[in-house]
Image (tube, one colour):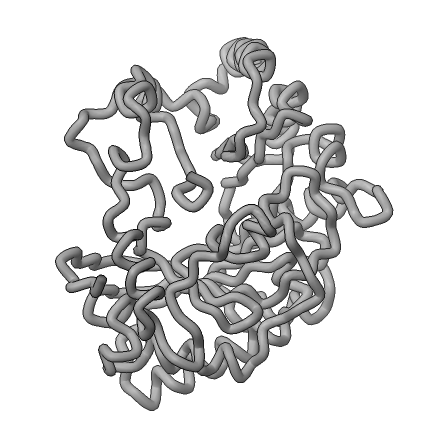
Length: 352
């Protein structure tokens, strides 16, 4: 099973470094169910970068400058800002090698970090953000209001993290002019959704993306609660003349229609359009294929290793081939594929 390269992807791709499995929060809905104190070794990070920047197709015929115009250099954890010095080291090496190789990604890159925001105001994080000003996108998770956020996103001692996370998100919004934020909806917090979004509007956010957890945890009563919450929120927007001033993802009209059966692409890059390295130096398509996300439920689906390259053994090549075969049809039941509101559905290919 050798991927022969029939698919050509031109555009931005995510290159993800899992810099640590450790986290200073213990969120109830976290998909990473198997954390540890391990962190990525800088030597392994450098090897991963050398593989990606290499022209040798024997060690990397997966994501390279020939099929990817630009990269989003993504850092995750655990909580990635626990290792902000390591992130800086990784970026310094990436730029150094790009300059030496006259590589096009030297100019065509952005930095993305998803964070819980609790370390945002530390001196070292602020120095990092100043250093990469204009190139870094920071996604600070704030689940709406204090009641909703602190019902799920807590420190290990049980204390909620809303106060510091919301302060960080507002500060970042004011610094960058970005009025966008994201809320994660789970069964344990769906009953607070309307008040949570109202609170984000009061803080100044104008684009609010809501994301339901993908895991199989939903029951019909949760759908009824969600419906009630959305009715209340809709009334609030209309009564305050906000329906055309605030963008609410769940109210997007284009999301409540069927999808043409010819629209057979995957929802995300989980079908072989991304690449990620974990704290042990193993290489995956997506972080959801890693041990930290799978625990003991399934075998991690790796596609390489920093010491050998990407797709350099038969099992890794087979995994790549299988990922490139994934479509919407291949992972959908008929009920899902022909759903009358399928356009509004997101899914996780790794979880599937």
